[in-house]
Amino acid sequence: MKSTLISLFIIDKAVAGRKNAEQLQVIRESLNALEGGRVIDV
Image 1 (tube, rainbow, N blue to C red):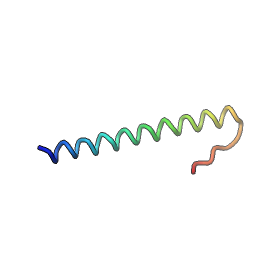
Image 2 (image 1 turned 135 degrees about the horizontal axis):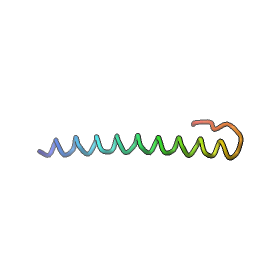
Image 3 (image 1 turned 30 degrees about the vertical axis):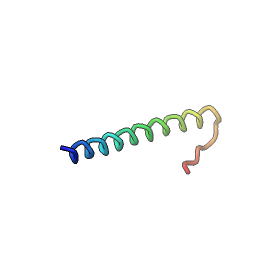
């Protein structure tokens, strides 16, 4: 049971990380549009 909870926690963190990455990409694109320049992903 404990290992199942740990696995679910890891999956949840991975999904949250992907959503955060997608949100950051949207923010970068918005800033790029506002500034009229390129956004360099570092």
